[in-house]
Image (cartoon, rainbow, N blue to C red; front, side, top):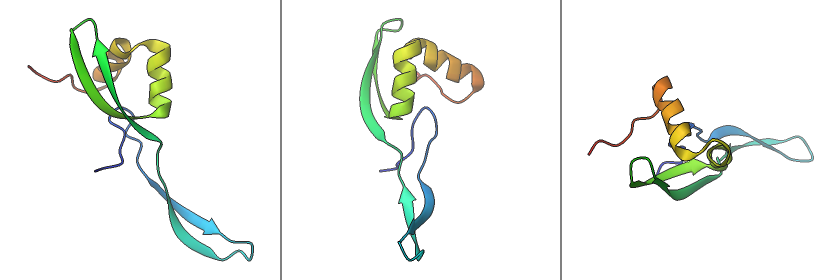
Length: 82
């Protein structure tokens, strides 16, 4: 299961754990992903997306349909074809 946001494209980053003695070991910073179902009243469909919580806040602000239309105009999202 990939840890990539369907809308924003956020993915794991790589960094270091730094101990008190400044010894560094590799670690991963994972995005906060949630699987969520959305109902789009304009199309009458349910879609399931794996999205970051930052994208969820943007959806709460703009609305799911407007946010998806904005991403589609940028070429970052495609509505599922029937």
